[in-house]
Length: 377
View 1: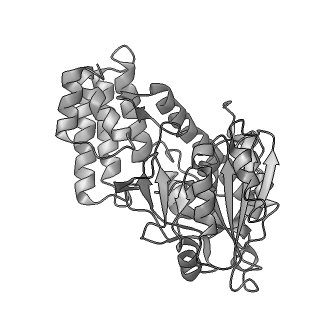
View 2: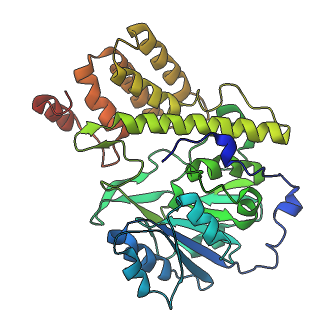
View 3: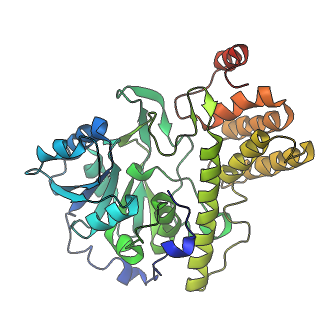
């Protein structure tokens, strides 16, 4: 994916009064809910995603599948669903292009964007509609983690407590909040119509939607997991896999964060809002990336003093009252930071691997095993 300046991803969304923002919801009771499944070369998982959408217990659910120019067997699978879902076939243009196309074809007041390797629980839409209020711009929920074969793991995505409530000031100060992956959200159509269409070249859809949503309403939360986030070798955001850390992917995630910062600054300037100069870059999620990357880059680029400074900033951020972390989580992350900063590279690399791994919880036995085999040396 080509790197883009955030200006090319901003379609000048305008904030409105509360009444105008939610106009149209009153006459949509019960709401129609649209599930948009965007797919590109995920034939292995596509059928399960569609079946999970069709299995919803909420009657007024529509399913739209947009295939973004797949070259595998995805379109053969879609032929079997043409009479049960709305199928859109298009040339490859990226996720934002796919979602733009699907949004113009769906009728729901609430919209779920389901990645084609993920799943929804059968009662997900019903639970969302029951919890929805007109004050929300989005409602988020955690997801069970499953592996490529569909086996449920013993942790959720994300692993920290999700944020909720009126978060516009939090975003202006911190630049971000704890949000669920794409499939763990239901979006107000009013929100999407205010900030879409995205230019087709814009690829960081998650960051775009999550960053701007708090300026168009409150963030709702259901504590229970209502879907399944699949971890497999093809995940676009996979950082740690096959016993190694993908430094290039860490660099990409860091760049995405900086694009998000620029996006927020542009939006704030257009809307007459004041954003902190430290937004995004002072949040512990970003500092975790910075520290991991600094250690991997080596002493030629970052001195021990530089690493200690990053560890101190990270520790301060995780102990902020609005970090979203519980006490034990804060202590663990602070300990991780100082170990990464202080240990020799060979001992620090497994810790960085575990910090970004989505395949399960790290254990001392796993750590010692990696040291003994030298898999991360």
